[in-house]
Image (cartoon, rainbow, N blue to C red):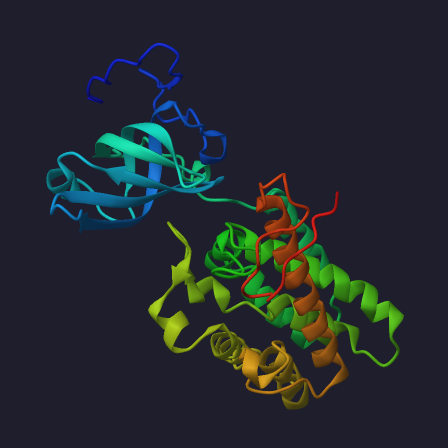
Length: 338
């Protein structure tokens, strides 16, 4: 395996480089400091060729690992290097970290595509903090507690399917707002279900089994709405149809395979899925019109917004301010505390 010969490191310049065990990352984006030489793997989220005012070509890159992203620049041999890799590739680079406009960027001297077997994807994409197998086992325990036979049969048809279970353990819950990481959908769903479990005992008049089933299945279409082998993005079906309709279609297909599934129960379950975004402007074809639909909507909304705030606070690295940067989707600054 050839990695090339790195340029000499000037005195006082820290090197993060390895001649062996190159599959293991040496340094993460969050730890890179100006003045360091960085020889490591990154995932390319953006790449475009540009030209300076003098007409010289250079390459703009956006490089990522599980801790964050930063800009990369290729100043020399940009046109040749532009052909070496594409957006969406893993690459091994030799570079220097420099400070530019209060941000760290990498001045890339050489790059090559990663070879098969060199990359461990969990090093490059954020993942849920809790073990997915444990979270899935906890979700199965809630499923086992659903006693209404048709609803239990429906849940078993989903979560005892190996393909669906595998996708559900890995899928993110969103592209850019909340739980945007591998395992995010499972983490979000389990959290919503735990909230619903408490609310089912707090409010009278709720059909607990219907409530729990609606909470468990409210985002099931997201396993196909997003692609997540690299950067989280929408699939064609996700863009054209969306997870709300996809979820209802998936539920309908399985309901037709369950003998004598009560039509009224099926209709109320569909309504939970169709209305869980709450309002028309947030994508709900219907607003909640049953107790169960209303409770699922608010549990879902609460968990999503709490996670979005937590991620924003964790990612706010400016220690000179008690506030995060402006959150475009939440439309506010968030107080970090002192």
